[in-house]
Length: 240
Ligand SMILES: C[S@@+](CC[C@H](N)C(=O)[O-])C[C@H]1O[C@@H](n2cnc3c(N)ncnc32)[C@H](O)[C@@H]1O
Figure: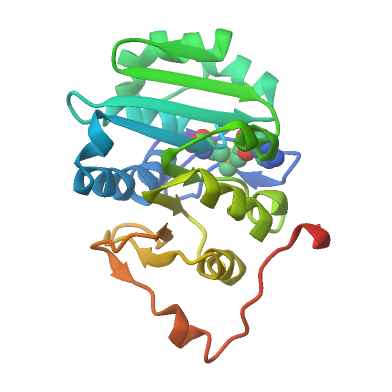
């Protein structure tokens, strides 16, 4: 258990030898690198007609899912799909020391931790104990992807070109991918698939990457210019 800079707790995984969140803060990272930019895009697209479909890769401690629910725009339904390999982790989350503002989500946290599912009038969450690569094969039409696996170094199967091809297949034309990663192979894979690349505008936290086929109002990364200086290389399934 690690206390991050914003006071929220995260864990360090023994299997991957990495923390679930950066030291900047589990809440701050989730809000500024994922939820705020993704919901900006959703707002621009009139909240995709009143229902936002989110793929949360992967559930982990659930910060991205839970903070999306806390920040849900009024009258908008959220449908959240989230694969996760670690069943014991999900079962343990009913006792996780989440921040105080999560108290009003206690019934949701308990339901997900016990039944891997929650549903009410405005929110539906499905957590599937399954490899994310298999899970997304049966998924259709999502508006937002929180790409929040461990780093490409230790979790390469969720950063390969072939993986992002599957994500591209299920992402709506005006949809958006958010990630903390600024790694060149990750950006190359997304660029290779025709995504425009952007960075978030917030000053209080390190940059990540925002990817969309649509033109967005964020600062665009001139990747063509970058490719004059570096070779485009990405992770391929055959290298894993
Ligand atoms: C960095 S953590 C996710 C943090 C999470 N988004 C949050 O807000 O707390 C990465 C998670 O991905 C899971 N994971 C890694 N590889 C996976 C795979 N191939 N399929 C499904 N889950 C995977 C790990 O068990 C871990 O819980």
